[in-house]
Image (cartoon, rainbow, N blue to C red; front, side, top):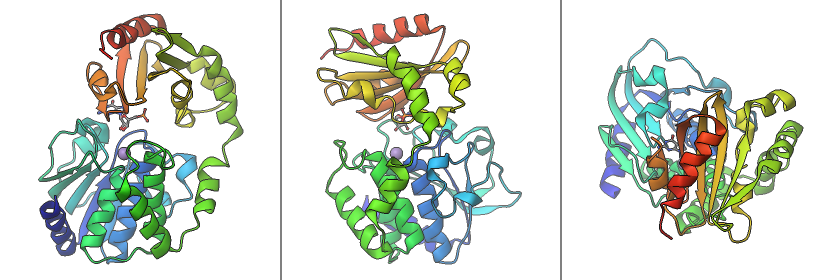
Length: 321
Ligand code: 5GP
Ligand code: MN
């Protein structure tokens, strides 16, 4: 692992132009790791472009550099391209999937199921967030975090560990967060306030429509919540405001696996899974063309809600625990 970090640090030192991308429907780690890497690279004099297929959610727009994220790919060659937190290469989106104008492709990830599509693949499922892999590289370059780098990487760690509550919140996560707080002069409460105490009203209105769909199966060990397209219409909220909804069913006593049915089209659902630990939901998601981590994963299923529930509950039923 250290060999690879050194290899990446050397490539970073030698390069001039860098493209950074992450997954569609970006979350706090995708955004924080991408913008944190961009801030670090800019601070050491590199020419950086951050491309994301989808816009930066409102929640993360306070992060420095978020206004420079582009849905386009500029007409130029890059020395390095970084793909972060991806799980599956296709989740970079159609534009990046077709893009080849880089010398070297570096894949930084912490998903159990990630493919090795890069020239260098730094995949460490023990890393609580992809932002931590970025921090390892920055440190290997002898970098002391400035505010911009620190705040982005801190947000990556904070969001991917569920504010240091999940089982991935290990010593590295706590120590790195401490380093970033100190070096970047961060104020933890100010960041928490932006992330957790400034929700748009629409999110709670959408949650109010979603909570009555709460359903328990398999003697209460499995619970689900559903968001339908009509709920977005009623509230004016978008899909990016559903982040975290899947945690409500999981938080109930006795529930081991939580499922989020999120309607994408009339007959298509994104299915998100959360586990309290016993069940490996990454394996479960793979049956639906997806993947993820032991405790958090996702996939896609076609059909009406009734059909999709039947398929997914059936797959969960087949799991031994
Ligand atoms: P979320 O439910 O927050 O969208 O995703 C939970 C976890 O599962 C994240 O780590 C995410 O990257 C992963 N995940 C969600 N959907 C997919 C998918 O379609 N494919 C893969 N490989 N991972 C996914
Ligand atoms: Mn992540």
